[in-house]
Image (cartoon, rainbow, N blue to C red; front, side):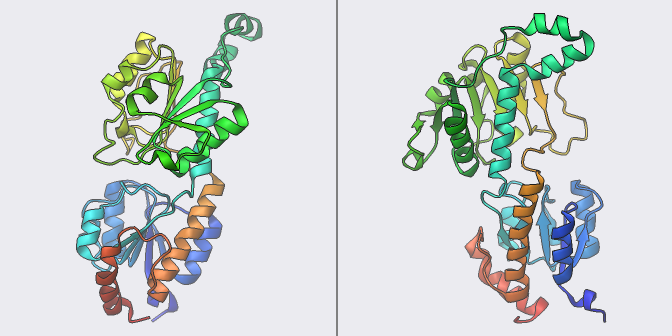
Length: 339
């Protein structure tokens, strides 16, 4: 039997950077799903029956049943809503993630979009292409707004929110307010607020929360109705956090000044964005955290987790669910040996 065949099998839901893939391939029998779609990942799970999965995309709800040898899921990022956590716990499959691995990247995307919306950059770019220099200069002169002195409201202030708040305050002179369950942990320059006040007082509203039962639909139609006229909305958390129909209606009516979305409710994107083309609406396909630097940080953390679990039988640094650890170790002993 070849050395490759005796190595623990690892399936990644999409391609990794060449350096990370090479490092993984030295340790494991690495396979990449042909496409980052749930049904394709499901077939890859059946075909490979991996000992571990590197999750960069939504895993099927029955992932553990499709891959009986599965011991560990290493999230290439932080959000756990792409992983069937309850099923993993039932099957003795451990999960790790990378807290803060893409925090700087996502925060920078948010800053870029806030500035672009305040300065009408999407509209100016389109006008330059269709109308030229003089007409664009005449149309947009005096329409931009400074970020300095304006209030940015953060809903949630974990790793991404804290990175964003620091950039906004220290680098751009914005006032930062936040609604969070742990206001005592906020940096001193961030003003804690209750949810209603944070939403209503924001010139720019940015949710920085994971998708949970509590955050689904959190930015509701009622919340959007209380936002300042002309306010901006920027979302790189999850599409399901906001009532998209209400957001679009507020943009169409002119009540909100603009929005930038890196996430939408159609996570697989099979039907495009499903959102209208508006000059003050920017949509990107969940790329805010997908910088080369974030991929390197996340990839190195994934390697560390897989080395610990598959090769050494040790807890990964960012183990999510402790209850699955002992059952996983028992299954690992049967599948890979005591190690």
